[in-house]
Length: 231
Length: 218
Image (cartoon, rainbow over all chains, first blue to last red):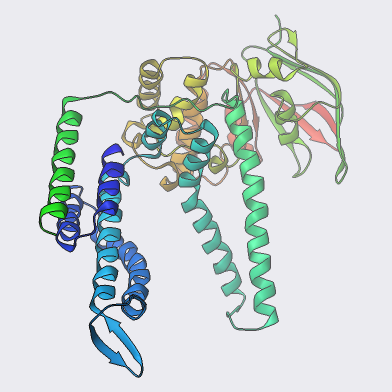
């Protein structure tokens, strides 16, 4: 986690394309080493890159420059704007990919333990852990209700009936979530829960962690030097 | 012999459903394996919740291990000796992995992580569930979930087991496996079930909850 944060800080402080491209290449290598699911990762990156696409379209037209490479009607697109948009795209992809590689493989309890080390309040950690655990359950519940609606010939359209049905669906999900949360709390109390979750993971510094810190430090130094000397 | 659990003149009513328990009294002794029967909405689950303090007793007395239970602290202590297995396993399993879920109770009892893990692994091996320990609880089959919830309670070594419809939604093979396991247990237990052959094979006494009244039946 420290590695991911350090890498992110270095990348966002860089402004040169070479440095950002090298950071992106390193992030890809890390993603390969972390054996991330290609399809899932690509899907997530695609969502991120739709925002980058907006920047690519609009930023060249909004950054003033001496020379323009494109003119549409009276709108002029500058190379500086395009480079700026590309740099934002490179850095966003590099940071997100590195975060996926280093953090997404952690179990929620390991993540909780790491956040505890960062002195994040216990309540926030519990909230995060339960959210991670129950996202799939909420999705399942949503799909179950949607199936039940479809089974009774419900088709989404732009009318009052649809909006009303969606409102009922959301309300039902909220009610079910509250009821289930209460039942889970009861079950936890039955097993001795008194407001505090005990962490299953204990962070221990191992030689491989030292090696990893060294590698990340070298990577960060390389990116900084690329940014400084190749600019 | 001192009863493990004793309920004396307990009454409970809901504003929406009216009176579900009316002066209910019974005692559970070591070795007792009682079936608690009754129609849907008769108050069986409510009675279980009252026994472990998940719902507040409106009138009457509940005692556990020889002492009266009144405050939340009393119930916190009794929950370490009385294991409640919920009707729906999904309400009980909340950790990312099976192993972590089973370690949850022992950790709350103050055991070290290493000891809790050792106990959890041992329990999973006893129930022949060792292959599930790294699995995500929400992705288990119904039978597996049921066995894991049982393991998560048994690992706390309770003196009493309260089982809320344990054979619910199990196929015949899983049910037979569960029954064989429960028959081997020495703990006193109360079992809520509508499955007559299952409770005939498991229990040595029956309680019938009907219109708020609890009666012992033969």
